[in-house]
Length: 546
Image (tube, rainbow, N blue to C red; front, side, top):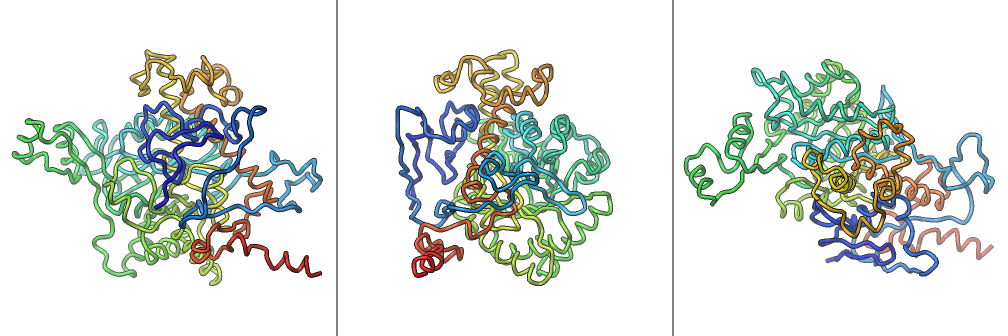
């Protein structure tokens, strides 16, 4: 079993708890005082690409990547010559081939092309309360960064202020708040995506959104996610709220209407209830039935006006993966997100997270194989987004290369959320009157933040860039969490540009699988990507034998 490092002395980072492959803690706390790499990047931005204390130190790599299969076992190629994908108007002169001239913009979609400033998107932020608490930071940060953000499932169903008549939505204030917050700062890059599960479909989320927002919103069908293979969950601590959710048609466990459960709750033997969503596809018995149901669903969404439709699928095995890719291609969907096991969660059964499904690397390897099969048949492959434990710029490059040229985006779930937590905690210190509104957890700045400065303009590396973008007056309305997210995304952007420049690729579409090697033969056997000792070996020997 691989134990991930909790501390990186070169960067000055440390994990509060057990570390994941992504570099995040297994359990990410919204009140955390630091200092994982993502937390630090939210304040320092691109400075976190380099070892600390320049001029007084030297540093060396200590991370062991030769053990086990995973994205950690992929290594990125660098080349000694060449330059591919230079921007129009530039040349292959060294003065033009600067990493700052690498184009990391991407697009996805069919009839309507959706532009993004860099190839990342957020995971689905749905009915978990932490998504609602910090939504303003997430949405404004995504809009300013120019990346897609996903409103996850069940937002309407759990909203006590939403109104349903005959089972259909008449008003949805929380859903509208989330969409409107993103659109306020949307400038043509990124997108707002609304996801639907079984309950959302029954409640008429698609019909409500298209009538109110038209083609400003992408609608997403959901088959699953990497963290679990049952429906979504939240936990509530109010008996009345649990009964409200049961009345909305959800499975609530234990049953809040059971007198025995009520007595146990009053005695404090039971202190919370879990609300669950339903499994999809239970009425379908064959692949042909799944195909017809899916195509009928997409046809209906197009009929009511949706021009952009996406699908999110989970860490299912090969059959379901093949169905997702083929049916997305046949339905001409704009995006397919494939989430590997190990993906993040707001609330999932823990041992299910640990033991179910296909891990990200083998799942994404099969994604490439199946996309290539479709392309060989002359079928246009859907644009792909890969998800499942990503947080750094090397992850972005590796995922883009592993499934090149089909990958257009890399989906990051928990990592960008850290910026929202951190910025909100800092804002609550400087604006104590807003502390409850923005879910700030701190009463004073911890030493880990004071190391960056004493006032916001000094603490956030992205402060001036955001102010330049929105103007000094509007800056008063920007959540600090959005500014932190902007700094984190800036670090990812710069780091990706540097990796790409080293691989002599000055445009995303130039990235290829040949830009990867593996650090062990087990990973080579899985992916078909050459082992470091074999990569370019024939070319090397032809030079020596010339």
